Amino acid sequence: MKQNTARLTRRLYDFRGSPLIALAVGVLFVLEKRYALRKQKMPLPDRLKTNAAIVSTAVPVLRLILIPAMVRAAAWGQKNSIGLLQHLKAPQLLKDTLAFAALDWTNYIWHRLNHRWPLMWRFHQVHHTDLDMDVTTALRFHIGELFTSVPFKAGLVLLFGASPRTTLIYEVFFELANNFHHSNLRLPEQADRQLASVIVTPRMHGIHHSVVEEETNSNYSVIFNLWDRLHGTLKLNVPQDSITIGVPYVRKHQPADQLLTMPFNVAPA
Image 1 (cartoon, rainbow, N blue to C red):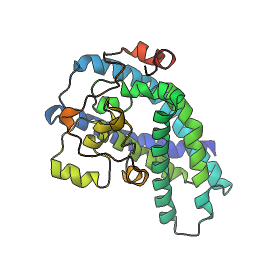
Image 2: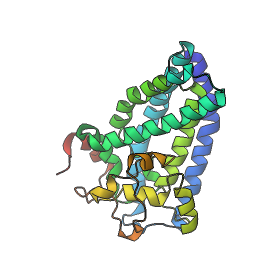
Image 3: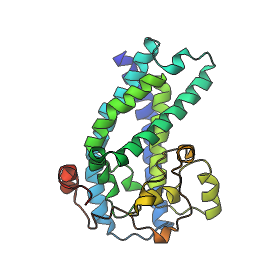
């Protein structure tokens, strides 16, 4: 089973998904410089250096621990007929669609828990202390947050009975959406409104990164903003020029070494 899941991961994630994700990051990085949604306040080289350092610690955990754990959980569940969707008598396409939606909902729940539970926020705050937000913020996550997500995400893959293929496909779309809505790309307002009726847009997620607590505690969704609508946490129409990105208790740039120790030193005042 381990060899089969590793082979599937290489084929779907490494050889197909990863090049697509890298291309999206490059395109967004170029476009957001030309069509900026918010005026950037920090020198870009300083942020690039810091965010690249954090990303370099996060990506190995994502690829070598989190994704394999989720895929193996899915394969084990499929082999042993464990999971809610394994017992649903329906076409496979419908089960895969339901699994995709369920995984997106669980990421909404995980994100919200990271804001509500003080211990989890200690790690998640590293993501929010970026004083500007662009596509480089998308993977600025503390390795502690990624490690703690492993049992949660793998366990829910098993609970729902998602297949290994659907789990990998969802992860690719998750990362594409994460890069898109963290970007500083200014879309035409009408296009943004139309997209925001279904998915999370840069304007929508920019509100979530505001220093204003009421705004931070909104817009937790990753791909489909249906979950914010259902849970009453959707917030739109906050003017982007009124948003201050970051957290109120950290208002200066933090180098990578300070960010890695931040969960053990810095908590909301």
